[in-house]
Image (tube, rainbow, N blue to C red):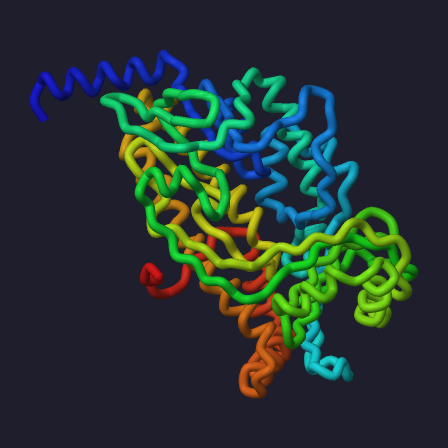
Length: 420
């Protein structure tokens, strides 16, 4: 490197350390809101853009019946961001996870294994919270932190200028030193950056709701592995649980089209052996399950996170937890770069983020997609393998503990995964 180049780099580093980097975060889902707040806390001047309208200060967010099981690493991030204490008061602890393999006829379980957090020295795996409440608290904290909010601003293009990126959106333009795409599986920002992603339609739909029941859940999440897809009941405060019910598209359409009484009857038939009679049922919604994996996580002056980078099966509660791990790593890399006087948008910083996340993301994608397919299959060899696998976990405490710890920390498979 010449003396002039070295001098120019040193000057850029000093300017990066002195000025607040301008970051445009696109997407106001939980991952985008958390990223915007974490980067604000890391000393960046953040503008959050979203294609949808955002509520005025003090106004409630649209009703969101879905919940999410947040594992301990996600809770630690939200605690650092200053919103966990209030959210915790409205959540339920997840002290155990029970996996049950069922045949199609609903007879006796073929395998039944319970994973307890105490087995790996934890009081709980995490907490189950309402997604709408999580978004509301993140949005309030972001406003208090002074971030710029731009709503009704669908991104149309991202244009590369000499020393910045220009986000072209429905209400104008925004220049940023760094752009963070958190705008979902069909990310317009990812497309504008020319980053490709593979999609794997599953032909299945997840029905999400919550319901009251007569038998206490005991803070145990129950995941039934049955032909068609998983049926997961996750504790909420009191005698209420949230539900993720996966079925093939045609069956899910039938269930969603039932009257309230008809849906209650179908739900209670499946729930009764585990949680007793069903009482009040929340609004039900259906979400097509499509696996997605981006080929890269970064481009010059840009990074992907959340579902813009990966969309995972709901099996094992890995979706939002993986997204929040993206947020934590990106914010850490940006903060560390600022402390060292390095521009947070530099290739060094962005490639470090990609290296830190890509193996974990690909491993979780492979594991959750494979497990979801195995859970939904009614083929005798697959069902047998699923049953024997659960029985093996139940018989080998060391293996059980290894699987439980894998939920909590970055994951990597022994061999590199090829791009799909």
